[in-house]
Image (cartoon, rainbow, N blue to C red):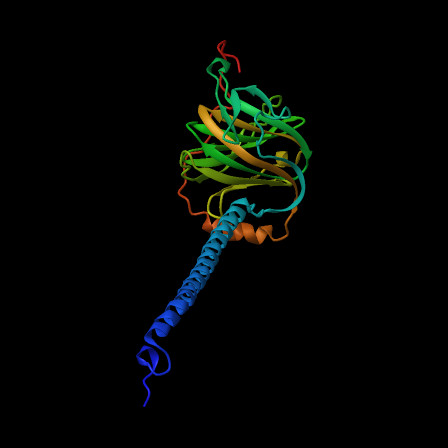
Length: 293
């Protein structure tokens, strides 16, 4: 019986066998390298797909967070109509439509920052004109050292009312008339709230007919009514006592009545569980150096 392979001497010589092995060696090496290369390419493709998946996942999460941050709260008392104006303070300078009679106001980190100016002997104020009857105003607020902030609403005849905000809560009031002594200031409602310094909070103010509602969430809100709130609205103003506050993302909308408000009001009244606090109010403004208001 004949032996096979390199032990076969009858069919081929040992030298021929070695030569055949040497000739086949590059093919074996090439096949081995091809296999490793194919494996490497497959690994790289799998790695790229895996990395791409996680990048897409991170992008989706970032988009979801951004969308969540950009979601505007829905009104409670009213329904949102046409946008009257919007301001995100994205520019380097404050738009000229914002009048700043008192205080120090500037753009800081993409927001409006305001503080008192001692020589004014008066709280800082920043105002913008608009026209509306019933209105929704939304804005973001951050305390950065100030003792108090105000959001005021005016008519062509003068002050209507305001929301006064302090680090421990906020109050809504009807403002006094500058010409009618019988039309004095009246506190309508107060809510406790812990405003943390350096943290942004979104506030919504709704005015429809004689009613005003200002809120942060369904437990922290103030609500009241007075015939004065039926007047035409011509201006909003932000005020500051001390240094500093920041305001951002101000939007004003036309408001229309919501037939569900009585039921919503009753339901939220039961959740208004904050302990009472003294009204967060103070003098409407400081006296100047001569003692005049």
